[in-house]
Amino acid sequence: MQHLSILFVADPTIHRLNAQYRGKDKPTDVLSFSQLEGESGGVMPSSLGDVVISVDTARRQAREYGVTHRRETLRLLVHGILHLCGFDHENVPLRRVREMQRMEDYLFERAAHAADRW
Image (cartoon, rainbow, N blue to C red; front, top):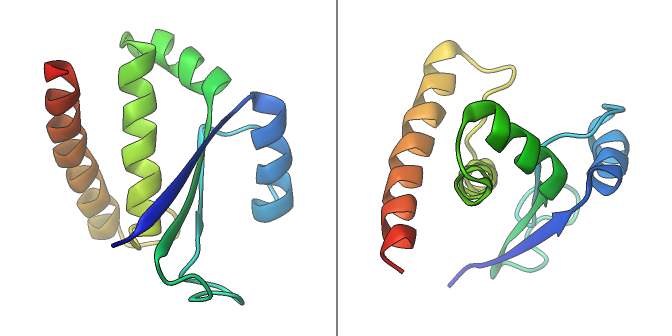
């Protein structure tokens, strides 16, 4: 069984993390930190990793995309989990970008449908 940590933060916190770990001096919507990769990868094999979501950015994007804050946050969570599973959309061939987009759409729709029934 894999465990997952989800952290909801404000823009200043995700800005700091984005600058520290990705060298990008700006806030972002979601960051993923794998526990299976990097120098200490595999130390906690039962932990898939951490997904950090900016509540502020999710709220702005929800308004921009015309969706609810809840749906946008769910989309960001799915996106972050896909990164932890090895999917990427930066510095990869276009076919890999499309593969991640298709998987994100598929998983998001399944999760949103399940969430709507609660």
